[in-house]
Length: 102
Image (tube, rainbow, N blue to C red; front, side):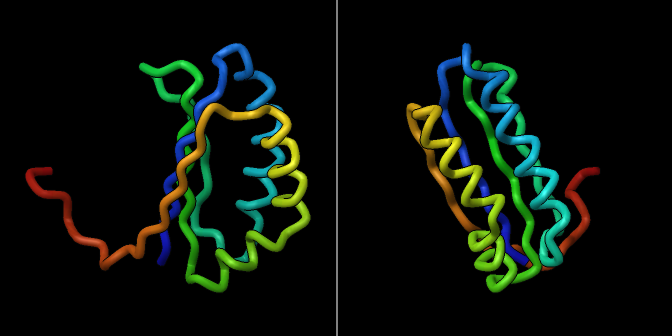
């Protein structure tokens, strides 16, 4: 399983615009065959900082995701909002284990 973690910084005044382009992207991505989870959230302490978490079955599923029509639409709209910064990292997830001290 692959985990994608991303941060995007926007002007806090753009929060509604970001949500408007994010919602259809989230809905379409969650419907993809290889998607195990997909969500965006604004940071509670840093207005304008959107955090993204994605779980993908494998690398092919992630590659397929980047080739979808909704990704093309989303990226175009995202560029139009001119985020202050965007960082994206991909991690391979190891086996699940119990949470220590839980």
